[in-house]
Figure 1 (cartoon, rainbow, N blue to C red):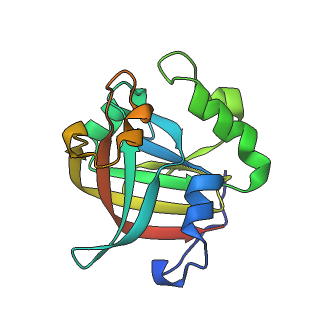
Figure 2: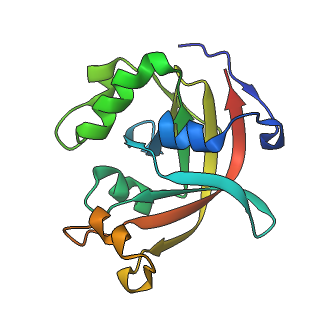
Length: 169
């Protein structure tokens, strides 16, 4: 499928990241065009760290995408228009271990500049180079209500990625 993406400077993005990530959600994808997985996420952020434009996202070790993130140097974040809410819902409630998310949703994987995968239907794509990871440590939670997100003590791993390419449709 031919795409109409154009590369832009991430500094020119005119998006509210709280809405973009927290309300509209995103697909985190890692792996290669021959072997990848994607998952829906609504936790993460964009910013500047170590003089680099970065994103950060969270993945639990129990998620199938975690294995792909661990093996990959690069990953992508794909953001969609509201018409793809059902796709995001499906990708967030079904495991790639059990179903082929691409065939079930009809989204079209594309190989990115970094060799990772993103989707032709996205409105915004960030291709990222993994530069840091850290497992969350529950002993460092200052507010006790945070623990309600971890009843099984399955703490997330945070990944920080340098934004290598920013594409808009």
